[in-house]
Length: 366
Image (cartoon, rainbow, N blue to C red; front, side):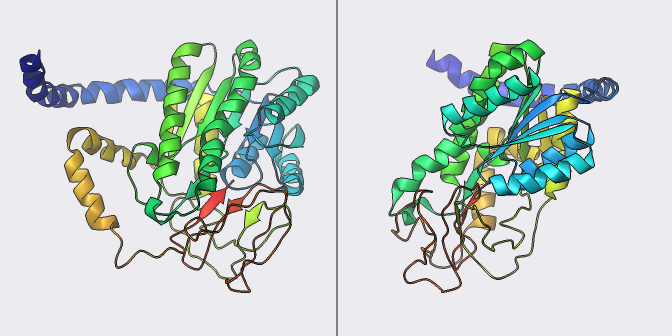
C-alpha cells in the first residue's frame, strides 16, 4: 500500500494539473452559461422577508440597504439598538416595505429564538437569513497573557453564525429559503496575527459546506468570502459611540486600503438572489489556493518575505498586555497607564474594537 501511495503522490498532482488545463475552457463556458441563466432567473425580493444579523454597521448595514432597494421586508438584528434605529429609517427611505429592529446577541441561542420567532409572528415566514457578525483580531498568539477573550472570538465567529442558522432552518425549509454567510479568505489563506480568526472562519466554512449536502436543494446556501474590506476600524472611525460594547477612542484618521464595503454588499445580495453558492471579492485571491494545494512551500516563502514583521514585536494589543477582558455589563472607565484620549466603554452595543497605540493590533466586532 505504501508503494501505491508513493506512486500516486507522483502521478496524481501533475495529471490533475493537465486535466484541469484541458478542461478549463469547458469549465469557463459552463460557468458563463450558469451566469446567464441565473441573471435571467434572479429571485424577486419584493415583499420577501430577510433577517440580517450584525446589521448595525459595516457589511451588515450595507446589505440591509441592498435588500431595501429590492423592496424586501427587513428584520435587523444587532446589540446596538440605537444604531439600528437610524439604519432602519434609511432602509425605509431606500425602499424597504417594512423594517423591524431587534436588539439581540447572536451567540445566545435564546436570543436567536426570540428574533426568529418575532419574525415568524409578524410575517409568517423567513426567506433569507444573512449572517454578517464577525470579530477579527491582529495580535501574535505569543503576545497574549490573558486568554479570556479567546472563547469570545470563537463564539462570535462560529456560534454567532450557527445558532441563528439552527433556529431559522425549519422555517427556511418551508419557504425554500437561503442562508447567506459572511466568511473571509483567511479561512484558507494563512496570514500572521490572525490565527484564531482564521481557525474560526475555517470551521465556519466547513460547517456550511457540510450543511449544504444535508439540506440538498431545499435550502440554498451562499458563502461570501472577501479579502481586505474597508470598515469602521480601517476608515478612521475610532470615536466612541453610545451603546458600543468596547471601543477605544482614537482621535485620528486612518487611510482605508481595500475594496469598498458597499461593493461587496451589492455582490453578496446579487449573488444570493441569483442562487450563487459562492460570492468572492476580489476573485483573484483564488490563485493563491492553487499554490496552497500544489506548491505550499512557495506560498509560505512568499508570505514570509512580504509579511514578516520588521524588528521586535510590540505587545501593544489589549489582549497582550495582561489586562483582563471586560464583560459588557460594566460602565465606561479609563484604562490605567494609557493615553487620556483612549477610553474603553462597555454597554449593550455591537462593535468590539481593541485599537491601541499601534494600529497592527486590534479587535473589531460588527
